[in-house]
Picture 1 (cartoon, rainbow, N blue to C red):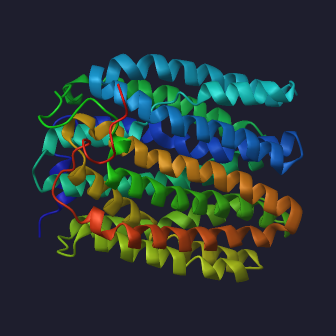
Picture 2: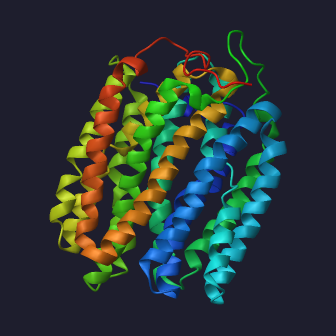
Length: 407
């Protein structure tokens, strides 16, 4: 049986941009939880840590689709270079503000400016689409990217927390900033695989991808999924600290990735005939059900087992969600469409981090997982209500998705 992953990486340049992109997107996961780990130690309060993290994540969630929209119009390199430079400098400022105990407002300003960081996962998918457009290999490439995203979110968060706890509070954020600078530089040097700028398709207008109903539904669903990530991470840090084993947080968060990564790769190698919208419903249903055991994890061992179980459906959720986006969004706005979905994850992580920090401070560490359960129920309801829209035709046009605003 041929290896579908070997086939997609046999294309010239694929290994190069994929490896560079993996490093460049680690900060997506490392920065939000790294800010929490850094500031909770240097400032001693979870609420300020969660608030600064939320500032970064929410601002990035709002700016990233606009940056990707510019990428769709002008190309990757002209947009990625200046935005990454600003983001790197702002992260350095945030680290210094934490280390030198600068006023609180400097933390928020630095986090706000750092949020111009571009969406590398969207850029990666745009490159795969350029190579395999309308070919079955694209599904395998998207499955690989979804599994890699999931690994980045969990392993990146684990690395960030582990460095901050084992070395010094700013270690995770320092590593994140280095990955952003080095990875993005290597990525933009891969010019041979950079996608061409696509003209606007007939019957569409130069409008935002968020006007598409399918993008709205999937983005909302991923907000709830993102909140489940952040809630699990923040609550895990708090619980392990309460149990007197703070260094265990890195290991516990790390096991989140193992089962999901393997399941995601297997799913990408299969040619399932079940409609994607139904696959997504199954995945989020499993995600919701497996959040319940988190409520009863009162030791590090039980916590690790519950977190492992709750992570199994993450990668399948990503794979089907991005697969639906590729099928439903016009080519000229694919980067933006993918970014809106990534934005949903970012918004969810921001809200989850802030709410989980507040719940932990006021009601105890264990109660933070109630947010995961509530978010799981919400994501299932969202996908159930969106089944008809997500199961529509091959491509959705922005005109008619929502009434056009007056020019």
